[in-house]
Image 1 (tube, one colour):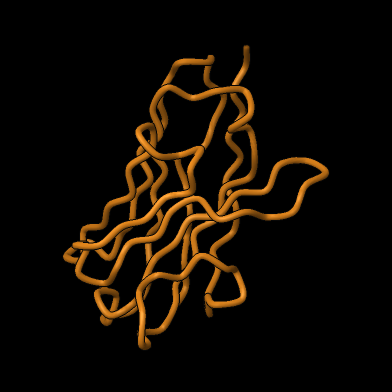
Image 2 (cartoon, one colour; image 1 turned 45 degrees about the vertical axis):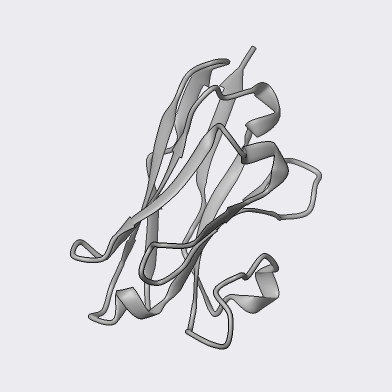
Length: 125
């Protein structure tokens, strides 16, 4: 699986961005999809995860109520809608895919098998 993330940019605090993660291959719906981010000088952290069918989702606490992860399996694409952005959301955002296993609840980067390149999100105050 090859992943291509896009949609980052510069936005003012309170604004919105929608990140996309396009995947190659014809078994996209089988993969658990996650979004991670890495701010300057910090470790990469989990943001959100969605199950293969798109029914189940989970977010890090700082993203709850502001971010929405979704997927369109017909288009082989996962999304991260980010609203009410804050300067502390500034980071490089990466999408990742995990082969199906016993659980969709994957919040650690080591649990993912494929990674896209990052897309920069910068939120100005």
